[in-house]
Structure formats: C-alpha cells, structure tokens
Length: 337
Ligand SMILES: NC(=O)C1=CN([C@@H]2O[C@H](COP(=O)(O)OP(=O)(O)OC[C@H]3O[C@@H](n4cnc5c(N)ncnc54)[C@H](OP(=O)(O)O)[C@@H]3O)[C@@H](O)[C@H]2O)C=CC1
Ligand SMILES: CCCCCCCCC/C=C/C=O
Image 1 (cartoon, rainbow, N blue to C red):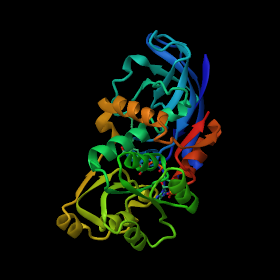
Image 2 (cartoon, rainbow, N blue to C red):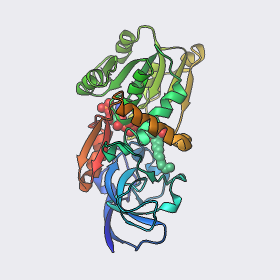
Image 3 (cartoon, rainbow, N blue to C red):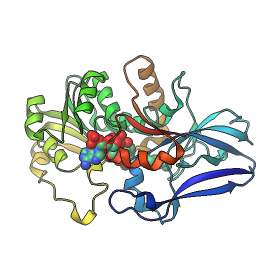
Image 4 (cartoon, helix red, strand yellow):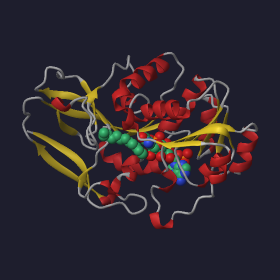
C-alpha cells in the first residue's frame, strides 16, 4: 500500500484564495489494476486558471493541475518504471494513472509521455514546453498572425505565457513591448529576453509610455490581463490590428459584482477594423506535439529562454499559488516536490 497526500479544495475562493479553503488529505492508494501506473510527483504547476476555474465544479474537489512525475510501479509496458509522464492530476505527491486514457485528452484529463527534453529539467515540461508555452505558441501565432516588422504588445509579459509570447515575437522579427509589474521584471525583459521595451504598469502612465514606445501604433496585442490597460492598448492599435485574448488575471480575485466598467472600445474596433478573438489552449490539443517540438528546438538553438520561478516543497504549493497570483514569479511558477 502506498500512502499519498493531496490538496482538496473544500470551500470556494472569495477574493485571494486562503489556506483554509484547502484541506490536506492523506490516504492509501489502491493496488494497481491492469493498464495503471503509480506515479511519484516531481514537479507541480501553479496556474491562474486554478483560480479562474474554481467555481466550475462542485466542492470539495481534488486540486487538479499539470504535473510531471516518474513511474514507480507499472502495469503497462509503454510506461516502464523510470518513465516520466505529464498528467493533470494536480497537487498530490503520488497518483495512479490509467494509461489506457493516455493521449486521448478530454475536458479533465490530459496525459502524455514527457517529451525528450534533451537534458533540460523535467519542469520545463509543464512550463515553456508544456501548457503555458503551447498557449503562447498557438494563441500568438494563430490568432495574431504576426508579420516581420510589426509591433507586438504583451501584458503579463514576465510570466509563463507572456515571456514566451514576447520571445516568439522576437523570433518572428517583430518589435516587442511588454508590460509587467515591477522594475526588476522590466529590466529582465529588456536585458535578458531581448524585449525592445518593457514598462512597469504599476508606476508608468500607460497611455503616454505606450505612445512613446510605439509611435507608429500597435499591430498585435496578446492580452493576458484584461481590464483598463487592455482598453488603453487597444485604443492605440493600427488598422486591421489583431488581439489575442488569453486571460484576464487582473480580475480573477475580484468580486464579479464590483468589476469596474471598461472604457468604450467600439469606435476603435469599428474604425480600425480590429480582430479580437479569445481562445482556450485545448482548441489545438491535437497539435500540441507540433508546438512542443518547435519550442524545444528554439530553446536548444538558444533563441528561447525557459525561465522558471521554483518553490521547493509539497507543503509550499499553496504559497507558490497565491505568490504567483500576486506577481512573485518571473517566468513559470513551479513547485519541486
Ligand atoms: N486561454 C488559455 O488557454 C490560457 C490562458 N492563460 C492565461 O494567461 C495569463 C497568464 O498566465 P500565466 O502565464 O500562467 O501566469 P503568469 O506566470 O503570468 O503569472 C501571473 C502573473 O499575473 C500578473 N498579475 C497578477 N495580478 C495582476 C493584475 N491585477 N494586473 C496585471 N497583471 C497581474 C503577475 O505579474 P505582474 O508582476 O506583471 O503583475 C503574475 O506574475 C492568465 O490570464 C491566464 O489565465 C494561461 C494559460 C492558458
Ligand atoms: C483538458 C484538461 C486540461 C486543462 C487544460 C487547462 C487549460 C488552461 C486554460 C486556461 C485558461 C485561462 O487561464
């Protein structure tokens, strides 16, 4: 018998999630059936959608999320002991995975072999070459359709998705402007990731700073945060500009009845003929391998930096989660178990 631990969400979040919204449950895993493997968790991902999707299922629920683990016992020759696996089993230290469902993918399960990361940390498999990197790849390239020389703006620029979007935009020959929440992040984006300009949205006059950084207007906007900053950016877009709406983290912890009204955008949308499209990364589930292969190649060629913010310890997953929501991370927030 294997003893396992997991985080269970027992109360819906109100505002910033609280530790008391979770219960740490210890239990015994049942013996493996045919086609099942026992996975020891190595890396856990903490992501904004764990906050945004909180009310999508009844409580209590096991805190789902992406993780990378190593097979410790196996009833499937495709997944021998020692193989690494990406699952959506979330915040637990051990889990049993039914490999007969592998690579099918439905609304709650995504399970696949950790790709060959060519010597890089397995944690990259839930970051730059996992769901967030894939989000950046398809969400930016498919919806923004960037062209060489165009000006791209990304909010949440120093985070898991935004930092990859900005770097892909540079690879595609664009001018890249990023918004992030601290001077250190701004410096990092310009000095380490090669952004043409980064702006601290907490201290700058966003309207003026963007006009100065993009005097010829904005062609593509990758929106990670929503709210008034997005209205300001869309107001400075060029004719036939493209907006990829990825997320709205500025409001995830807000009371839905108290969210401020946005500046009216219809004149910009109409007269600049903007194309604004939202997406969820599962849309391209059958093409995830294409993104993974390209992202690994770019990293190995030195064109893409897979930055991470690592927290250590199973007991620290909650702290890493609320820390990420508060902007403590630069790059992908992951927890080493
Ligand atoms: N549509 C899809 O399929 C997917 C959407 N997403 C979305 O992409 C976005 C980025 O996710 P991800 O890269 O994983 O997370 P990040 O790694 O970017 O972490 C979250 C970041 O959000 C920023 N933030 C927090 N509060 C605010 C605020 N009020 N205003 C502006 N920024 C804020 C913080 O950075 P800072 O210091 O700059 O404030 C923080 O570091 C989220 O909106 C998420 O929901 C993610 C994956 C898939
Ligand atoms: C198919 C089950 C896996 C779930 C994938 C999670 C996708 C995150 C989408 C995020 C949206 C907003 O943050």
